[in-house]
Every structure is written in C-alpha cells, then in structure tokens.
Amino acid sequence: MTEILHMENINKSYYMGEEELPILHDVNLTIHSGEFVSILGPSGSGKSTMMNIIGCLDVPSSGKYLLSGNDINDLDEIELAKIRNKEIGFVFQNFQLLPRMTALQNVELPLIYRGLSFSERQQRAKAILERVGLADRMKNLPNQLSGGQQQRVAIARALVTEPTILLADEPTGALDQKTGSQVMELFEELNNDGRTIVMITHDIKIARHARRVVHILDGHLTEQTGQEVE
Ligand SMILES: Nc1ncnc2c1ncn2[C@@H]1O[C@H](COP(=O)(O)OP(=O)(O)OP(=O)(O)O)[C@@H](O)[C@H]1O
Ligand SMILES: [Mg+2]
Image (cartoon, rainbow, N blue to C red; front, side):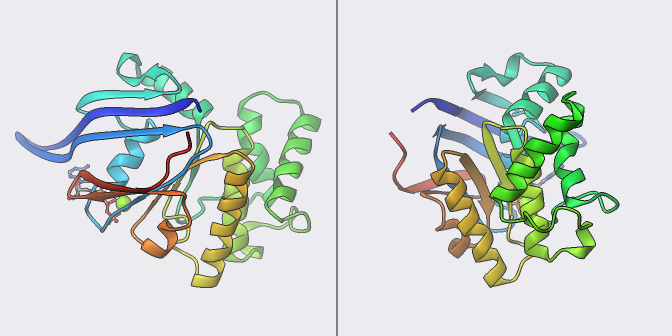
C-alpha cells in the first residue's frame, strides 16, 4: 500500500517568550493508504498539536514530515495551504457548519472554491450526502438537524473534494453515546470503501473502532496495537 503519511523524529515546541516548551518528542508515525488509525491520549498529551501538524495547520520544530510524498519543510505558507486543501478533509468536534446554509450548500462550498460548475457541484454534493445517509435532509439548515446528522453533513463536506486523508478531531465529542457509535459505524463503512482515516480521541471506546490505535502520552507516541494495512 502507498505510504501517505510519514513522520520521522518530529519535535514540536511552543515558546512562551524566551522559554521553550517541548510538546512532541521524536514522534515517528507512518500511515498507508486505506488505513483507519486513531491517536488516543489524555487531555494535554499533544493530540491537537499532532492534528495541527498532520493537517498542515502548523509545522514541526524539527524532524521530517512527508504527506503524499511532499516534504512539508520545503513548503511556504501558500504551498502548505494548497497541500492542506488537496490532501486533508477535516472533521471537528463541533461540526463547524455554516448556519445559514442548507446541508447541501454546506457540502457544495468546498467545490465552489475549486471552480466546479453548478451541476457538477450539485451532483457530487448530493451523491456524498446520500452516502452518509442524508438523502432526505439536504434542504435542512444545520439547526434543523440532530447533532449526529450535522456531523454527517460535516463528514460529507470533508469528503466531497476526495481528500487523501479524512482527519477527525474528537468527532463524537459533542454527541451522545448512541449517536457517537453510529458516526463510528459510518467511519468504518467509509474505511471499508477505501478511505484513509486518522482520528484523534481521548476515548478508548471510540478509538477501538479504528483498525490501529496509536497512543500518545506527554508528547510521546508510546504504543501501537492492531495491524497496519500491508
Ligand atoms: N499555542 C500554545 N502555546 C503554548 N503551549 C501550548 C500551545 N498549544 C498547546 N500548548 C500546550 O501543549 C500541550 C499539549 O496541548 P494539546 O492541545 O496538543 O493537547 P490535547 O491532547 O489536544 O488536549 P485536549 O484533549 O485537552 O484537547 C499542553 O500542555 C498545552 O498547554
Ligand atoms: Mg485537543
């Protein structure tokens, strides 16, 4: 399988004035196309810091990060944004849908930025909304949808551009247990369709839906269980 994410001795520090705060320590991680990986760790362990680096929202202080073969160190802000838009579909805890737009318009939006025609946008957005089980809710505004449905819209929006990685940060954090499990079942189905998923969570029950669990503790990737896709 193709290697799509490769991190080698990644370190990340934040600076408070002169003071260096080391957060990630020599992180090594390789993810292949078609994997479903969760990064599991307690509050403050460095999960969001990892997510920001994986998603090219921030850069490491040192170490090597290759995303789909692109060396992130070589890129400037604009190139980083391009890679991010092409490679990563983000899903957040709080959905982050635009409140005055329907489900369909929210999902279409990333395609407008790509300059696709109206009919092509409609076709692709509708198809992906159907895939996540929202065929009959496309005209609803976010506040006319349940939390689980809103997260499905957000997942559809993340996938409509066909990103290399679906990157989710606590995607069930705002959902009750039952709805959260349904969203995890959707992730499993999407992974069975061949989507590569990286999910950040503090919840071991949620993490176990992934095929591979990577633990993070105090900025160290400590343990890997399950099997990598060969
Ligand atoms: N911009 C920043 N400047 C300084 N320190 C930061 C910054 N962002 C995060 N930190 C520190 O880095 C550590 C890891 O933070 P991070 O947000 O990655 O944790 P997390 O695992 O996502 O936690 P949570 O589960 O609470 O979201 C924490 O000690 C935090 O205080
Ligand atoms: Mg966090």
